[in-house]
Length: 146
Ligand code: CMP
Image 1 (cartoon, rainbow, N blue to C red):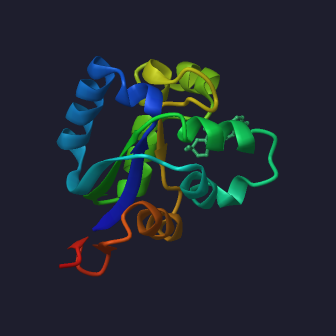
Image 2 (cartoon, rainbow, N blue to C red; image 1 turned 45 degrees about the horizontal axis):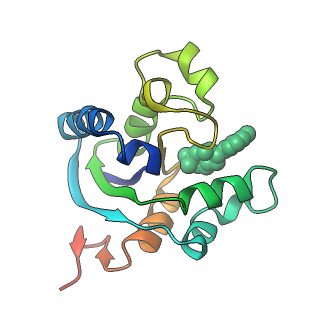
């Protein structure tokens, strides 16, 4: 079984209807190993998105993620990483709308930065991102350390 990090961005967490729909989709498709509302500080945001440092959207992205609470989940299923990313759709919202008008980013994304949710892109990224947002989570055991 694979695990991934799903991150629901601040503007979606404020949208009760969107949260209901996304929660339903998640519970139909995955086991939730852990979940929490998380205030992503600027420092945390810069660690989380370190691979994008220097890109033109980096400051906008890290500032936005620091603009209000997000909701983080550790999801588990077969082929979890790809499954969550295909429910999300393409990173860029205009592409998501054309690719699948019912995908999460097409429905709830507002811009490339405010693209609704994040999903890890590999097993290595999933472990790195989980360790940043859930430092107490033990991936070997699949739950928080006692
Ligand atoms: P996310 O899944 O959070 O992971 C990296 C984020 O960088 C991505 O979603 C987008 O929000 C953002 N991003 C990636 N490419 C661009 C881009 N070309 N313009 C603006 N933001 C981008």
